[in-house]
Amino acid sequence: MQIRASELDAQLARRLLPAYVIHGDEPLIALEAADAVRAAARRAGYAEREVLEPARGYDWSEFTHAMASLSLFAAKKVVELRLPGGKPGTQGAAAINAYCERPSEEQLLLVSLPRLDRSSQGAPWFNALARIGAVVDIWPIERPRLPAWIAERLARQQQRASREVLEFIAERVEGNLLAAHQEVQKLSLLAPPGELSMETVHAAVASVARYDPYDAAEALLGGDLARYTRIIEGLRAEGEPPTFVLFVICNALFALQEGTSERIFNRSLRRAVEGAAQRFSPRRIARAIAAAAAVDRAIKGIAAAEPWEAFLRLGLNFAGGAKA
Image 1 (tube, rainbow, N blue to C red):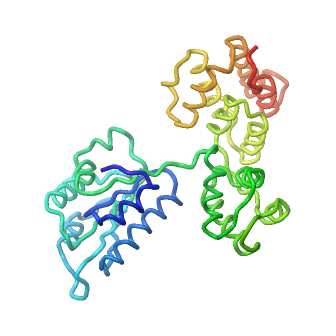
Image 2 (image 1 turned 90 degrees about the horizontal axis):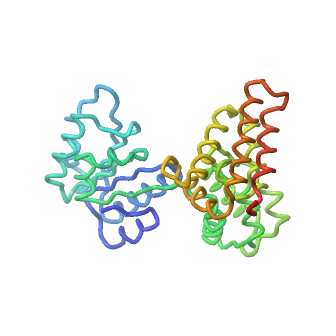
Image 3 (image 1 turned 180 degrees about the vertical axis):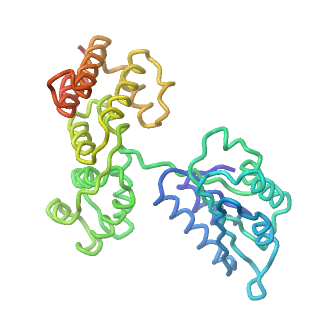
């Protein structure tokens, strides 16, 4: 079966499965999901834990042995298989398939790996794990959901905040969920339970936001000029190559002009393209593409303008939301 991270606790409360696969793009949520599986296993009597992290030349008979052997001191065991490269190779796939044919009630297999593409998720070894266990899909917290995520974390520590305060925190931690988690925890140490004031949060929460070019394109197409400006300035400060920023923005603008989001692989940006189709006229889109061409000339040194200033002018001329 395939489940979301938000559904994992409920599934673990019903019963433990022989295998859990955690894969995705957000390290904090993946870590918390793995911790939830470990905690449920401990409560169920899985007292021993063995961690395997195969590298090049790994002898997969060690995995087979780990899944077959029991400790003299513990009746049940959790075996963690960490695949940072995402694929176990031919021998590893065969070993995993062999275990899935005869899973043991005394063993629980916990597999951690980065997000796999669709073709890799169709591999027999992956499907075998999904057949006997649960595949937990880990997705990043997208910007519109971030204030609600922060509010939920604050509630765990008996704190709450207004929408304005939540938006302020989100602006400071966007794109850096692990740091966001740490900043929220910091508030539990610096402020008492109850309502958090803007003054308290402003003094306590550091600016740890990290952005990528897809965030800039999403903000541009969403008509959020303040966020677009903040992201462009952030990318500039982080030393992001302006050429790649322009590539991502142009790709989004051309997709918008063509009326299709199929060329967009980033999930949030794809939705932004689809939503912008109803908000921007063909004339405004054409002007934005012309402004992007001016950014290209600035990057190449053909125009006298500074590239990052040209990005800001593009946003000023395009992001507004009204048809024209």
